[in-house]
Image (cartoon, rainbow over all chains, first blue to last red):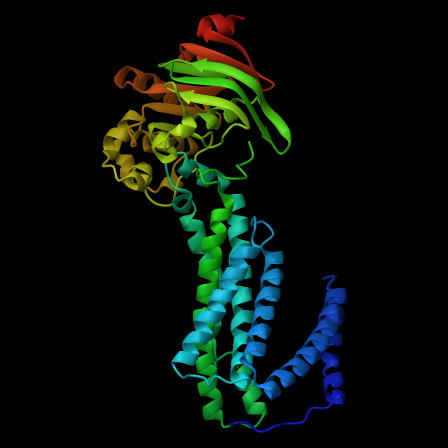
Length: 258
Length: 219
């Protein structure tokens, strides 16, 4: 399906010209992102190089335990990263861990059971990484919106509680909108895929010399898998995290400002 | 006695809002009066368990409110907040909001009428009403639960004089037409006299004088 291509470090370094453009643009317009861009470039180099060696080891060992360990590390890092976007959500880490783990287990479990991908590290690791990465983004966006809306609409929530609504009922509209926020980016990009942009997997396969039809089919599978995983992540994270705003007696832990 | 607060202390963000407060509110119409920031609204929220005290007890008809099923308590003791907070949809959708959650039937037109709004309001978009009209829809949706007690937090603070008079006359009419007890929080001494027979004064989170309204407000 694929042929190897050789990329030298010189070619990677040449691509830094584009990073220079980003830094110049940020400085010119005072966006203040120069340091962040530099950190992002350094981290991406170190992290991807490290993961390259880890993946190389896992592929050569062909051990299910190693694959599961790597995916677990991804889930934990993903949950910690997403928590930073969910700072207004009390106790956001456990819901994020549950959401990312469930998204990974359910989607990977299904694609393996249905025979869509082979149960080999070469397939499970990259697909798992994409599933967890997209689930992380979706959960982070959904919880960011949830925290913002519960804060902004605390008066409405409390007015509903005052009429005998349960905490779940009082926050249901907000949870619905948060879920939507978490999913909408991937839904929109899936709608325009092939028209406005070429997704990464397909680009990678084409660059590596694969047959375009194979590249498209694999990309379609991944897009559908990702839709499932972001839905699970956004649904589980918002549903579980929404409870954290309330006491068991259906009271807002942070009531609206007087 | 409708409500009794015994040695109630409540803090928020490490600030004591109510301190060792003892108060009694009888059946009928009571006013909780005092300056802004004295803890009046907090006291109201303790009555239907939107918050619980750090220490002390709140009794409703002689029993600790924490012994009651909280959702049933809030349907029986309904709170209308200071500012309107309606859900998206029509006035009808809003009037029936709490009643539908409770699985009760409701007569939207009667509730609107009791709240001082004409029947023609039923199909209108809630978000397009004036603040005064929205506040009366808030009242109508509390009435749709057929509560025994209405808790009103500064019910006219966001309204102009005309709308204030309309809401006040609605509340006075409610008292003559229903057996609902009212606890109204207000910083307005004259409004307390117009709406209530009994008053509790709160200052700096502590209960001051309490008793018949003329006696308390004459002090």
